[in-house]
Amino acid sequence: MRVLVTPDYRTLSRTAAELLIKALHAKSNLRLGLPTGRTPLGMYEELVKKHQEEHLDFSKLMTFNLDEYLGLPSDHPKSYHTYMKQHFFEQVNISPTNIHIPDGSPGIDADRESERYEKAIHDAGGLDLLVVGIGANGHIAFNEPGSAFDSRTRAVDLAPETIANATQYFGSDRVPARAITMGIGTMLEARRILLLAAGTSKADAVDRALRGPVSPDVPASALQLHPRVIVILDEAANHHRVDC
Ligand code: GLP
Image (spheres, rainbow, N blue to C red):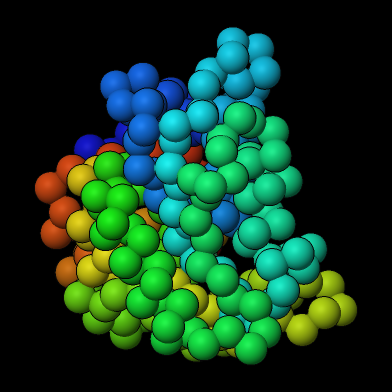
């Protein structure tokens, strides 16, 4: 596992974008796993800038998002479909048919959708590169503590702390209690993984994920089992600071 500690969030975002661009130059039809959340926003901004200013070509890129809330229509303002459109897809020349996000629409058969999604990844030849964030409780995608390391794409219940954390984005709307997520087993099959974490609120989770015992109690610790992981942190996420 290679750990790069960058001085600040801006450098973290640039470093992540550069790595991704390098992968895209090496393989224009890259199969890329993508996260949502606050952490990758700067990376998406950098990629959009490269497209607008230097015509970076995304036309052959194929993307697979990590997860989606269950029970939200895809055009709901807080769905991950909407997030991805706003921050990335609508601002670059990706082909809509190359975009994959689990469908969490109300009434969806979540088991069938999970199977379909898993098959879509498989049929595409697997993921070349997977970008992931980490939750303060150590989750990756929506694999909450206790998730099996061989889990596949499936419907899951969100941990109370994950729901509490998301209320800041949902305002008066209720945060969905369930989601469809890539499994840890699915994620570990990616050829390369890039983990991003920024801010002091992530320092404890990062420490447990990178240096603690490998355990389903800390889903991100599964990344220690993967041979090609790069971790990009900012300074704040690098130390577990204990207030005295
Ligand atoms: C959500 C997402 C994860 C993400 C995590 C951290 O739970 N499902 O994929 O990594 O939040 O989000 P943030 O980057 O906003 O801290």
